[in-house]
Image (cartoon, rainbow, N blue to C red; front, side, top):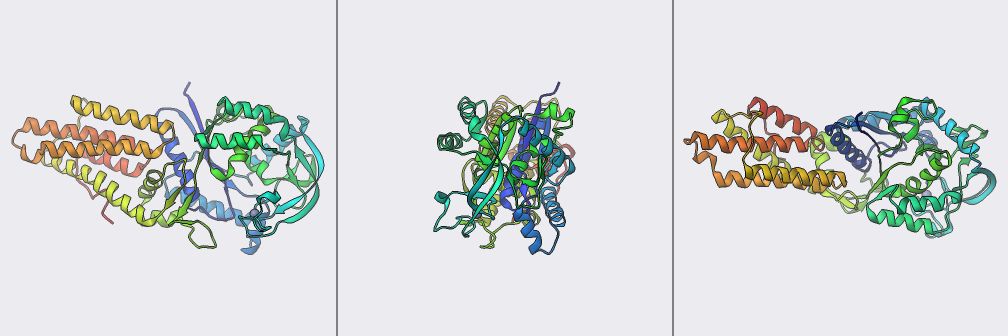
Length: 478
Ligand SMILES: [Zn+2]
């Protein structure tokens, strides 16, 4: 039986369309999904949209729409952006899907049966923007730092989940890497969160209308976070004895951004433990972008639309830039100037130049790539080296290093061309053909390694090599 690989992005909140931050996570997941498909694994790549909660209802009202109309429209915008970026997801879950609602209801009933749910009075400061209670400690000048608003004091009877009962076990699971949390700093962060006095959390809300109601108390709605996390299991049919669920759960990898670590690394495992389900194997946390040195925000008007970027630069240029410029686990800056520089130096000059030079030479001489041909020793070891570095880097989710290994191979080819000056040895047919066929083999390998990152370009290169026809430049200079 094929090895399975179940990878997820977070489901994105539908109060706004896709931006460069959500595109970042999704492109990363796409690269990993494509890579694992190339290894012959049975891949399930899930993404989707998070569509309930007060914030959505407010945004819909502002737009003069019903919440359902509003989320229908926004989730379509996400799909459109992912199509533009060549995202090869296998499933797109929406939390307004019937199968999600059914699964969530089953899950909540299970949770209730576990004896870990109780009713209590909750009094606390609530930020409607965050849709969560926040502590005094988190406030700056009495305001929520994210929303610049004073939270309301709310008192209501809610259902609570006994998170505390699971904390020692979760600590142990994380310490022993039974749930792998990466990068290392994030694992440390989670372990230090666990040392603080984390309280039980409330799983329902009384006055939030746009949501899924609690199956055992219809007057309350499920807290949007508790419900959203379950998308990872409802998408594959949790609660209806589905074969898919048995096959794909637990997830092999949850990719997330650093602002939602607590939910994924602590709350989610606790909920799963309470209901007797297996835990995700690995959680990888990436950093945040600033845009041209500033925090990305609607108010500043610097939210970058990935559709705009793709229309201007092409999907591959955007995909390449996002994963090449910044080390995936760290924070970084998104800058149009840097994108253009990378495009010109790496794609147009580096890759594009090599491919067109070699194709022109091979075309003139009529050398084609044959399957049986093996490159010489020096070439072979260089290709092997690149493959090994690349594989290791991708498995460690170090995209920039994987790309570096490809560009090292490109540099090696450039040097080889300079050293052997094929245009000067055209009369020595054997020697000339040897040089060109080495280069063709390397280019084929380069195209292969590039496929998960820049699939369109990879396909074009492979076609050009096979047909041995010079076509338009892969990357016309900007
Ligand atoms: Zn807030």
